[in-house]
Image (cartoon, rainbow, N blue to C red; front, side, top):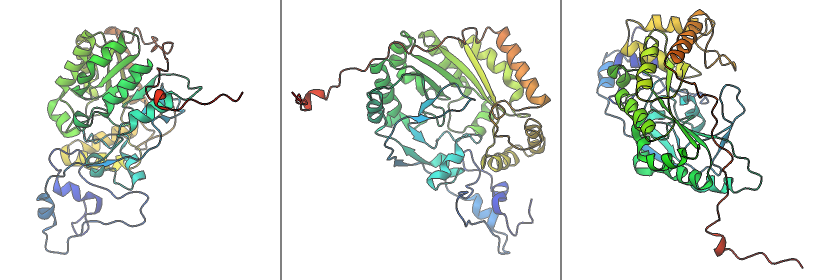
Length: 376
């Protein structure tokens, strides 16, 4: 820790965190040429002033995107298209790999990411236009691959539900990932789509420890509510799975088997895991968070993370970034495989979402448009 004359990015180590928020600092945007840092001018009052900072409110800004789907060709994920109703996420998960994307908006991946949200009110309309384009080839679309589609603001904005309504009308397959029990609000749509083989839902359960979850994912549903969501979805006939992610060496990875066991009891049929990823600014954010909340084990956790990344804090190579490398990562992979087999998970992993039912419905606005006259 510095001597206090220039705290810089470590100011959070002295100030703690804001209640209800995950990140403990707001690092500068990496594209900015200049930045600011906290500086004590000798009066030794800096820590006291930071400790009295008021809570941060959430603000919303409309997104002006002209397209709905985001496309990718990554070999690490099983889909080539996704929908993201929101940019930024109020859940505040300190480890979120999507945080660095906020820098493209001129916002910090730290506290800005969880307090300055961008929402897409026209997403459903844009999606319908894209699905109606001649030559569109249906394949499963992912919702929740970047930020959570059921974060708190969805309760009032209902953008995710509007998107599901469009997908249902077109019989378009969808895979949803969330750590919110809010997905149960749309169980009516999901049940109908599940009956046609059009939907799968994965609930992210990072830990069963309520205290750790509150610190690491401050505005997400409690672990028990997420497990209840799996149970409710499964009983409604909706294929439900559990995603134990991220597994953080030395912090929550010891819970891997217990998470899978609880999810299996609740009716989960599928499971997956991802080892912690720390690209770009997330590395410093995670280090600050560890020193703030778990100072006794911070060094150990960071050392174990490096063991899974060839001695570095992160390895972004395809094929390595999701699972890591080295003995520790291999042990985690073996533990997952053994537990999943023992619990009967992923036995239907090869089952694919149904793409054969896709059909463009009649355009309700077609009657209002003048018919094109024949050339001859």
